[in-house]
Image (cartoon, rainbow, N blue to C red; front, top):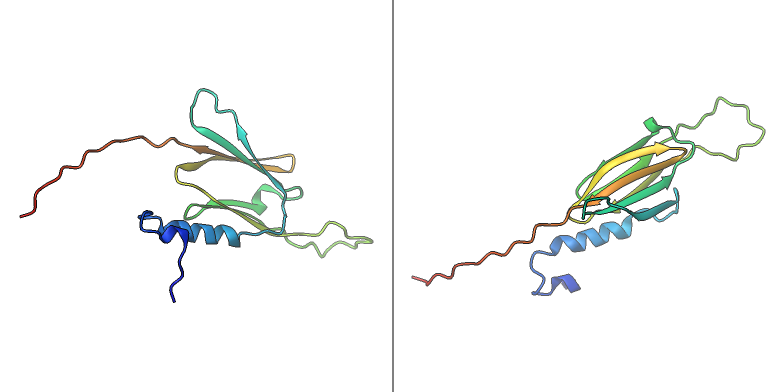
Length: 142
């Protein structure tokens, strides 16, 4: 039996990738660490929409963080080595690893990433697509 979805309707030509994107978004980490904000920021003179994702990554150094874009997915990874050398009386701050993913729409590009005061800020810009009108010539068969 084939699985039917809203995007398999014949009016949605070429939207097969969207279903895979929704599945990927559903599988993204939902453990809540690290906490993050997504905000719309002023674009200045540009009419392009600008967004900022800010993650609370206190305790992570720049070399322990990785920000990559792969197949329209922004992936932020943090890796800390567990410090077994210390003689702790209490250990409440654990070395932790995380992987946080965001699915990006067409036209969204990463502008920059900045680490300051334990906050990793990633600025994104959504470029307005050019609106084009094209007339298709109709030929007669034969």
